[in-house]
Length: 465
Image (cartoon, rainbow, N blue to C red; front, side, top):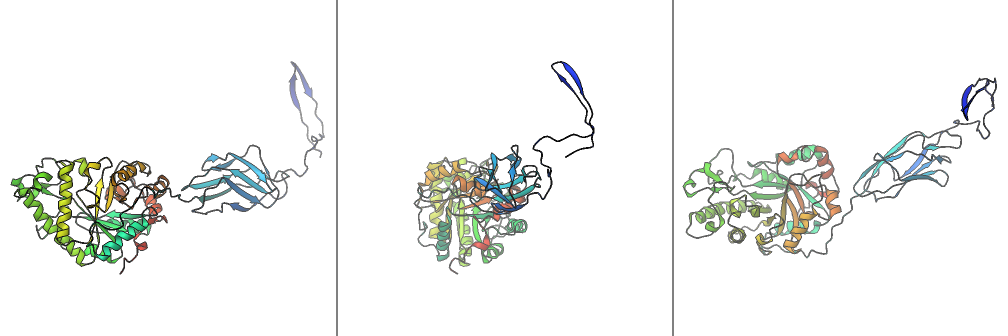
């Protein structure tokens, strides 16, 4: 091939400069391909893994098949999540293979930049992009568990037994979702989750925090626990019900008739478990009054065939609440007192959930008084696995009880907990503060609630109805 071009060059050699004269025609170097850069560039025919595929096994090779024989440039630019592939080579003439090391529960965005792939004439394939997502791997180890297959209360209602059996059937396989109600009882946060994700949580939680303010004990016009409409609506829609109890008591005997001086925190509070359990003490009279009303409320739910995941006297070992200030021995007696009171009062719709802080084995009320053990976690970052707490609870319960995240701030991501082996029975962000971008973004909720391993309300069975 000839060019009507004049090429001039100055060069230096061994200190001597010379001038290359101009020519009208120059012959190209030997081996030059006269079709350089011509013809149709290679096009992608198929990809492994398939573009957009999800929940797939991890892979060690990405294979992109082209419609003609190809060459891969020695300096290539195959990027996987902004990191270059370990290597890339040609296989079977028309396949580019990129070597990767994928892990579970991850989305991989792959970009093959031009000029990585070309044909024999140096026609370069255009940029090509696709993505795929690897599946969640469940590393739950059932071997340390010999779960109690029956509730601690043999007189539990048939539905309560059915709910417990269902939780047993899912433990280690999937995690139920949950939300918290407003103290005045509503289903607002569950509706918020539905509006964000298209899914309702499986469990909604209520709290008898204002027992003394509500009828029949009080007459506040903003709270009425005798009106169970929100709970009935939730249960009728197929949801499970959880109930907590921030137990407000008078700070002193003089405050018994002064509702403004009731509290559950210890600050300025003389109320404690030791005196509450002593017949003849005003504290004992006080808790018996409260327990009678609480039993009435719970029996009202029982009459409507509503099972309750009941979690009283939580976080005792932290000694933030009055029920923990007198120590582990008195606390255990109080738990057992409340348990026996409810049983003797004919309250048989309860699944008893005890809350552990992980390092409080001596606070455990005993396997015959507890059905499920929960943990309240507010120090989790990056939605990580909390296998550390899981192992502590496992040691306390000796593998006899299901474990759950009874409260949390940032929710551990389901793939992380599966990878860590801490497959909690359910998770519950405490309130609306923890359903914001500072803790759990809308995008996170969408992914979490739509995971095949997170159970939502529409996936619950009818429990023998």
